[in-house]
Length: 303
Image 1 (cartoon, helix red, strand yellow):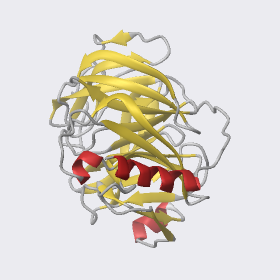
Image 2: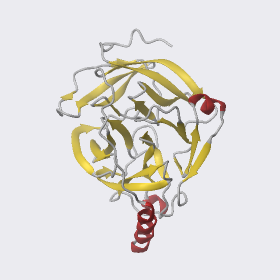
Image 3: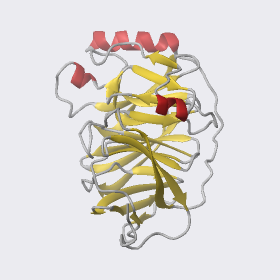
Image 4: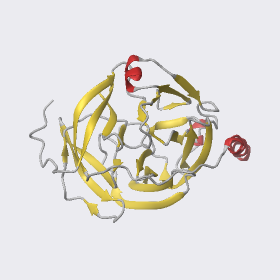
């Protein structure tokens, strides 16, 4: 164990740099009230990958991580290029998949200020030992520097499968910070990380158990959402938590017109007012509506 840790630290420190980033508030007009305008991006890539857009920059760049574990990131100049399969460049993260390397695990990644944030491939999976006492590690990889600039072990996020896919942690960006959504003894724990150095700034124990939803929870515009299937064409909220006031709302049942199926990946980009997800073996996007009135039932959901 000591040798593996020493090798990893040497690789990381050799490329670590200092960076600065102002805390930028994303444009929000209220809670998430609707998903609409579905667009299929690719239907030939399966359900294991993740499409990412920068949540800070207005750049048209698209990044694609093709598997739920890997170390090669594809970059596309525009979404049109991604849809056409025209790769601009690729980034190969140092180290192989597993065996103490720096590959990613899961599909809960985000890109912010031209940096990729992801969960590092767990050592317990690399070396086949019990994962129950290991904490998830979050990595910041700077695309400009092509280097790792920060690493943080989450104090409370346990390595336990949940949701519809392999991810242990789902990341989100809100008001200039990176949030990690994980589980501890079956309940959601939210960890606020500094976007520059990944220092832990806050931990919220929601005291709310994972409802075994068909889709991952998400954070958008200062609120955390956990949902449940509401029928074949809809999902409804089980919990809405205000990240500032810590007020928990379990009585509001906001209905979203989203077909019920196992979504391993559900990434809200508040800068674009879009969500990227998988549906019927295709990578798709929906427009996200912030503000206004919630749907109070699923009767109007048609596809």
